[in-house]
Length: 152
Image 1 (cartoon, rainbow, N blue to C red):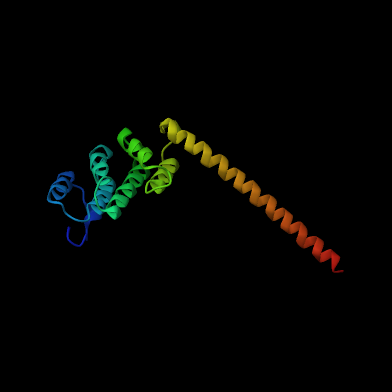
Image 2 (cartoon, helix red, strand yellow):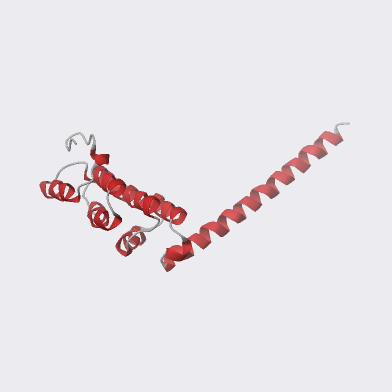
């Protein structure tokens, strides 16, 4: 693993190594925390993901949210602290994809109340958009048919 270039950090599986790199002020901590999310139990990765969400480098903070989404995908759950961090960041910011992953891969019954409301909202909105597009397609098909008959 190379902390200078970031090469190999997605394979990081030692939380103590991440902690030492954090203390040294290394670059690529966000990338490395994705590695922890991929290779470590959620309880070990979670505190490091939370710390990475507060890094001064905006890009590295973004990778921390990617790590949270990855953790939700792999574990089918998140820690209460990660749920709270996603809520604090907001649904339209860097946490948007992580929230989407959480809604997709965490069972509804295991979501905190704010995410349950979000899932209902997303589901209802998706259905309404689907119906709207189906109606618009039907109207367009009708116009096309009528135009074809009027030319005869």
